[in-house]
Length: 407
Image (cartoon, rainbow, N blue to C red; front, side):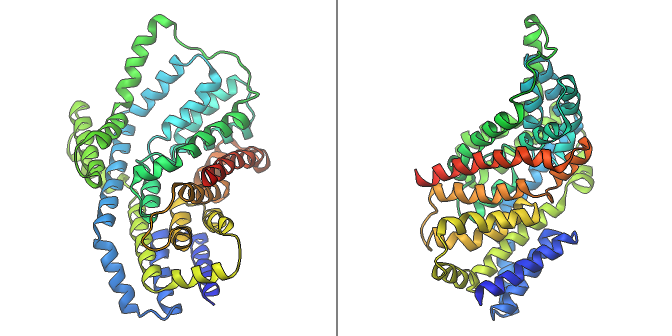
């Protein structure tokens, strides 16, 4: 019965998401449904929602996500990302490397519609090398997301760490092999076979100026990372302080009026991302407090399904059905975590990597993933050639996660 009840709730989540409901609102409704189906008073659900909303972890993550989005918009408006692209095209002699480096560098910041930012440039370079539409779609989509397993500035990465009760950098230390595997898969199934004709790079005498241009464009991202690692403060506050310092410096050096912050906050920030964060952490607390997680976990253990399959497939299916990393983490991790890390114990790095791989590979394989569907439409590509490259690339990442699990 616990599995049937949770299955009904998850089916409702998928149904509402298919009708384009906001994930955060859907998770709030799912929290109420947990209370009704698991005999947990709605007053207690409301109390859990309030406690989760004012929890320092929730507020810290919400502030960090908003600041990251503000920095992304500032870099977009000041053409810093465009400068990165132009410098790369001039510096890298191999066109095969440039076509992958463009979406990868755009992917360093979690900007909404980032795949569409790099798509025209990938298309231009791809045409020079006679790259077919399916391959261009795969390269733009796959390399755009190679950092999401490990990069601490991604909201989804921060949410995953919170749901696994880990610091973001702790999770990154466990999952960095997944990014390496994603790069390897992208190279093998995306770049190999493209002609070796050189890119129109600048002569070596002009390299210094282009390197300077690249550094000028990308320094805010590097500064956030360096300050987050180097500041001798509580690690729970370093990211927020680093972002505030970097945003302030960008605005001063780029001579941006302070009222631009109000415009960005009002018109450019996707506030639904913040709602998703609150909904996910409220949903996790209600699942835990209601006894739903313990009931489902006990049922799964008694079912004698191998734990290694449960830990991978539950997040994978959640990601596949929703196309959202936030949903894959929010739905899958609370169910699996008690099975791999009993109460009071920290999750092992191998299990963290295995669960992350399952969740995110499900998202990457989902036709509901917005970046995939938009990129496919832009390049006017067919689904089959794209999945012929996504499929084996995901197997490379899954195999690497399996090695992390057993090592």
